[in-house]
Image 1 (cartoon, rainbow, N blue to C red):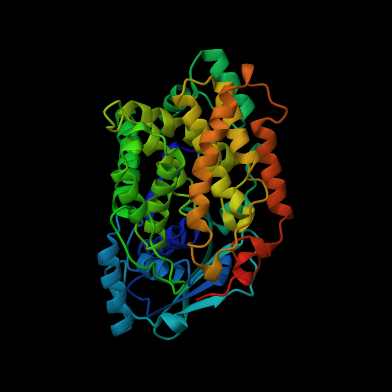
Image 2: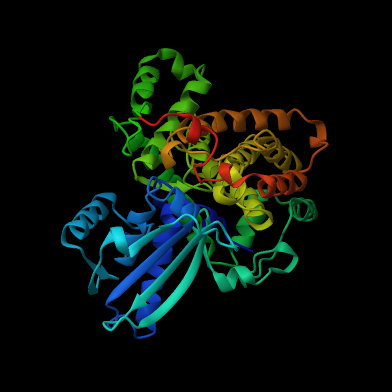
Length: 461
């Protein structure tokens, strides 16, 4: 089993696969050099970004993330202001400290190669790194892949086929499940809710109190991202001249007394989701849920529904929501993919909508079968959703797409609760498999390459 805390990672924007993943890869490569005793002998580093990482890497912040990772920055602890200062110094001095220790000359324009013509065989997000000594001799070379949601893998790991299409982490959980059918069967046999069952599984990874601390930390990070997004104004970076809209929406909603009666559901969800994704587009701190590009959906629904009567955050309801949503995210990660470069945006916004629908249904007292039904509805109406970011930036249509996804998730949860016994012609397992097949059939133009769809039909400003 994977842990739900693998699904919800705290990192920086604008992309989990193109920013968080490459940062982790670069940091891992430098650490491997140090472990092998080769760091001090390294005089030059060469990085080759392949496939989707190259085609949308500039707009997705991949080059900056790579350099930060080489310098030793980690996605979950990086301060955006400190990172910006380190990058500015690097570009001015053309010097880089590997792992914050060993300094080498580094020229971003030549030492990072955007090899968009190379389509990696194992995954569209390929990244090759090589280290050389003073004489030009190659000290080490490794190829890694950023597989979505901040997950990374080496070529060797991807070549090893998991048993029964499962990811093997070596952790034995008491209620191991590889499908929605197995998950529901365990719930029925034990009488546990999905959240209770997942929490029991998490005990195999760490003590219970540490898991709950981790869940609470994720919820706080989501809230903090919304709060910052509601106060930051101006134009988002990248050249599209996209104006932040969440703060103005927030001001209007806060000034309207009807908002206290929750009569403006769509407006609140839109405001919260856009606040998160505007922060993501600006390179702020976000939670992969399950990716950065889809990071606004789950926080928006949690912010609106997981509160007490006094409008204060409710710790227990947030835990139930995130544990349930995390279980659904694990199914997509294990049985298909959460990478836009593999699945298109159905693998990002579609999965986030599915997770949020299931989490909200659980909060409303749904049975495990109804939770699965909500998750299925959430994905069913996102099947075929393409990933075609204009200018290679995670802005258009990504920001508004999160707002739409949050509204869809709420409706999916409502529809599931109206199903007696959650009867459904389509099961959650079937819709996950359909998403996987659809992603495989989808043209690469519509999978985070900016070579089709809106990306070629919208004139960049």
